[in-house]
Amino acid sequence: MSSTSANENDPLLVITDDNSTNSNSRASLNDSNSSGDHVAACNNFILDTVVDGTEYIVEGARELRNDIVEGVEEVAENVKDAVVEEVQEAKESLMEELNDADQGEMFFLDMGLTRNLSILPSDVVDASAAAATEIS
Image (cartoon, rainbow, N blue to C red; front, side, top):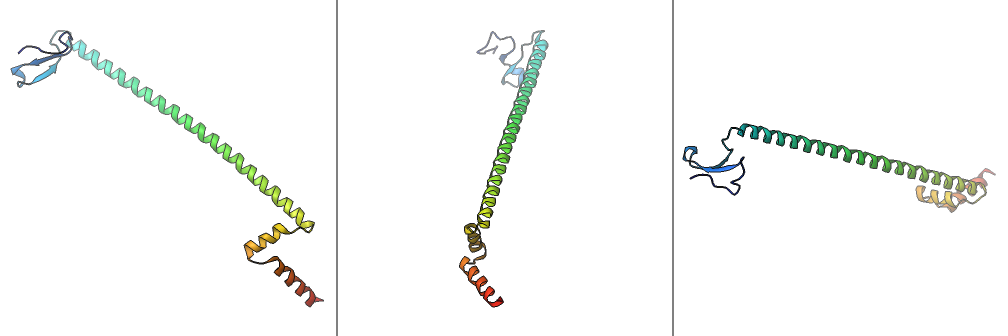
């Protein structure tokens, strides 16, 4: 059988059914003199496409990495600012409570003793009054 193909006009690809090639239908390059040029051109095209595609992927990965780094740096800066702000607020609250304690308002300190040491503020007052009575 001679050549049969959907692309019979394509000089690069011709399907042949040739008994000399194990009786299998296979795609082969046209046996014209310029077939070596066509193979080289195809190889160059494939190589250029792979190289361009690889460069495109690498460039995309670099851009993605840079975007991620910028995002992480921005988040880290925001977290740092938030932590500094919270510490500043806690410091101001503590200083305010200590100033209140100097004026005799011991609510914050009494609550801290109660929660952390399981001591009731009235127990501390009673114990200190009893100690003062024994001393005098």
